Length: 153
Image (tube, rainbow, N blue to C red):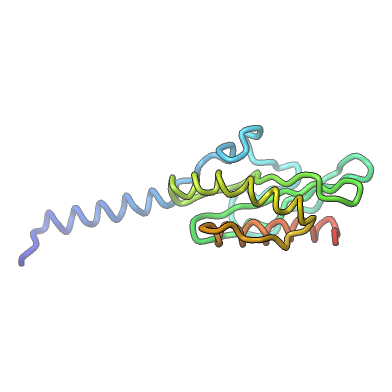
């Protein structure tokens, strides 16, 4: 079976559009509507992997830090943790980028479950959510990096 040049060109265009679609990032507010912009106060990495800046200044007895940007099979994320009175009191995801719409929807469902796991366990040693193993692992790794920054054991 012969293929014409139009078929090769169509395949090239489809591949190019697929690559462009992979590189699109949803707004961070998609998973945390209270925040329309990623936080730079605590050094949340807006692009690229790597450690975020240290803990932010908080009221006495309270510390917050944003963990490292963690890449996983379907995107990347960074978690922010707040410690108060020796307990983890808040966990959020100020930075998340997903490869596709489905991954964004899955993360929107899974992240609240992972947040609750961290608050219940009071650590980053949490159970992965079934069907979202890579997201769970990236979330736990970023939470642990944030906890390390504030020296939480």
